Image (cartoon, rainbow, N blue to C red; front, side, top):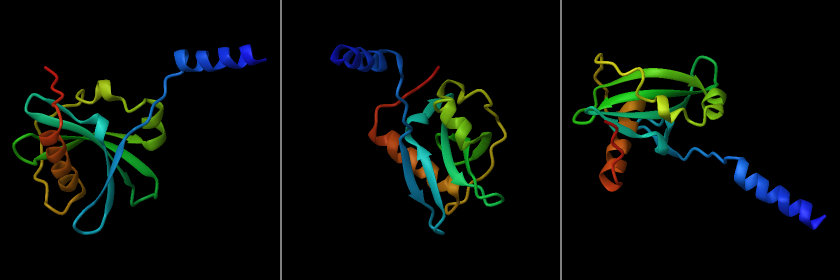
Length: 134
């Protein structure tokens, strides 16, 4: 019995990958809630790519959006959307974060959800080793 339990534990560690998104909860200056997937932040070709989670105002479900922002300025674009359940099933889909890169970025206001996340990304990248894809 103990042997079987031990084998089950060993099997679980070897073959089952654990996954947990590290969300950073943020509040905009206007009081809106948003979460930033800290593990999703990638710097590539002069842009930051990162995923944010927010409650959709139309249906009250959580949505995850991949955001592309300039490194030097906060011009940004929403380049992909996921229902939260799909995002979790894809384990964050980090390997595809830059696939929909665009040159059509829009100005971001200071008090917006994306503006708040952009400032947090800049802060995190200034204090952490950079992840750069070429």
